[in-house]
Image (cartoon, rainbow, N blue to C red):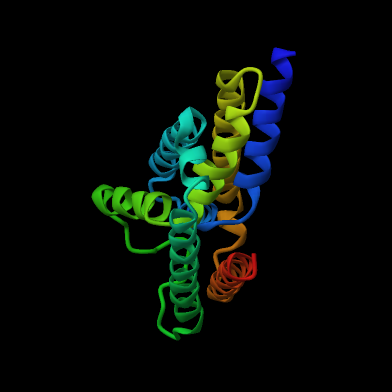
Length: 200
């Protein structure tokens, strides 16, 4: 009975986290550039732990009960995703953009931390997934704690696998044209996510 909550937490957490979002896109890019990968993964996981736990503890239910907050989160997510898509498209089209995996200018640790926190905490779409959806589902379980642990485990497994895989693929993607496709693909996924929120 209690194991069901753990499994449901893992499955629901995985289904939401695996869907390409700004955190995933950033981890992929950092992994391909081989810059601050462990730091980026750790901060993404830490943010998920915080947000999922807050949601399961009641914040998700609170937001769900206030339509104005839901709408603010929804349209804030649309704006953020469109902004992210615009920047990705700009990078894909820029003729002088630094697209090489190796030789890319090294990012400082402070800058890396700021970017991870921005894509994790300034994106309202993340709150819809973690705080509202996982929070409300978790609060309804026989064991909210085990559901919470399951969802967090999914985050740990996915981000670790994503960062490791991106680093392994880096040597195969060390071509400017590949970076253009990557940025273009990221932009398309952000536009799709924004469209889902708009027509939800």
